[in-house]
Amino acid sequence: MIKFIKNFRKDEDGAVTVDWVVLTAAVVGLGIAAVTTVRSGIDTAATTLTTDLGTSMTEAAAVN
Image (tube, rainbow, N blue to C red):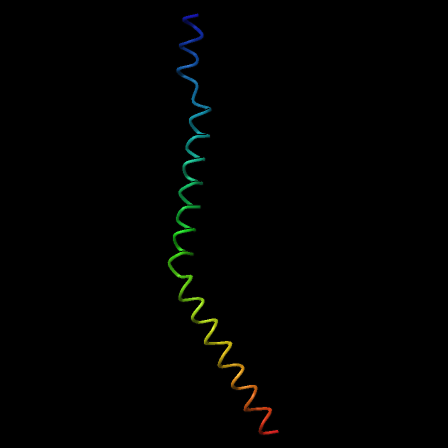
């Protein structure tokens, strides 16, 4: 039994898995934070682009 406990204590296979899970969670968290930060700016830019393109198309149609 003592030998089993010593081998179990030396085994590090599970520790690598925990490291990868923590690293993946950190990357996902940073991605969500980045999207949350820039979402309103992207929405504004998309709305402005749509409005400007609609105006340009309307003016181009009126000229022809």
